[in-house]
Amino acid sequence: MPRRYLEIEEQRLAFLVTEWLDYESTRIGFEVAATEIDRTIHLAGLTFDLRLDRIDRLIDGSLLVIDYKTGNVSPKLWELPRPDDVQLPLYAGFALDREDETLGGLVFAKVRAGHFDFAGHVGDPTATLFAGLKGNSTLVRNELTIEQLMGWRERIEQLAKDFLAGRAEVDPRDAPKTCERCGLQTLCRIHESEDVAEAGDEEDAESLEAADE
Image (cartoon, rainbow, N blue to C red; front, side, top):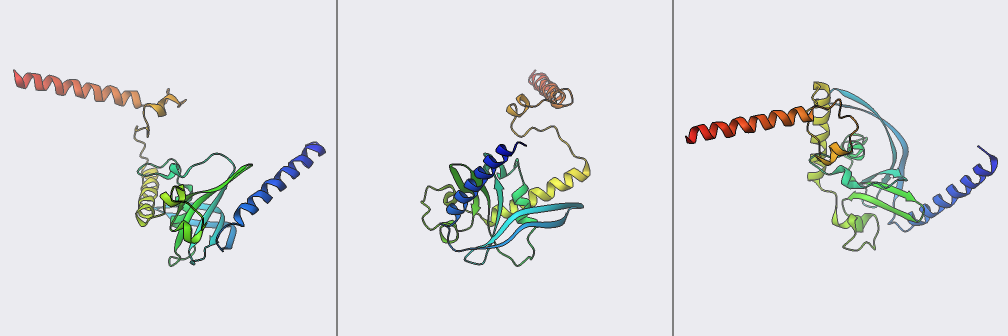
């Protein structure tokens, strides 16, 4: 790269990191417990080599799993029953060191010029993350629950089992919108499934008509 380009990029990154540190300086007291943590986990017969961006220890002793993002991401990606993205739920549910550690939350650290925040689920965000959070904050409105953690664990384990079993049902998560954005129509069997379903409906209708007669 040209030297001038690298100089400008260095200035941009320094400014970005400084702004992020200013944002984090307003947090309730915490400790960065570890960064760039390598973990190998075994799940339902599969082995995963993971690298967690960062884990903080919050003021109540619980752990906060953090993943840095520079794009526009949302914890809605984790919503059950069919999450679009299970990266952080996988980290939070299976990659912590000890079973007796308490998970305080899992969040995206959104590092974008002019827009810095945490997005995710935290058990008690006003007591462990930011004291000044208002009631309409998404962190306050979407606190981490035991039910969420159990649901994510069950879903991730089932995904691993389905993968090993070779299960690949034709069942788009958000049809027909999913199909409109897909570029693999020539390989997909969803239209075959629709034809079978329509044929079954027609047979059922004919059977009912015959029964009525």
